[in-house]
Amino acid sequence: MTDSTKPPTVYEFIPNLGRLRNDVLFGDVWEGDDLTKRDRSLVTVTLLAALYRTEELRGHFRRALDNGVTPDELKGMITHIAFYAGWPCAVNAGRVAIEVFGDE
Image (cartoon, rainbow, N blue to C red):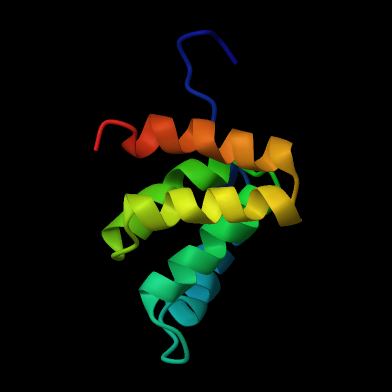
């Protein structure tokens, strides 16, 4: 690969992973009627923050805001997980929050 060639995304590199993400995760799970998308977003960002999944957290913070979770609720979640998942997880999530919605 040369410098001018953009590397493939993980979903281009592993197409079946992309299919499962699109068809199962976002097609079936996220569209289920047992939880609202807002609630799914809050659960998802909480788990991603607790697991220190920085890259995935960025996109899901945006999705959470789009699904009606407020910045204040996300800040409250970050404070809450500090005591259950650990301070580094909360600080990392806070840094991501600043990137995503810090000026709101």
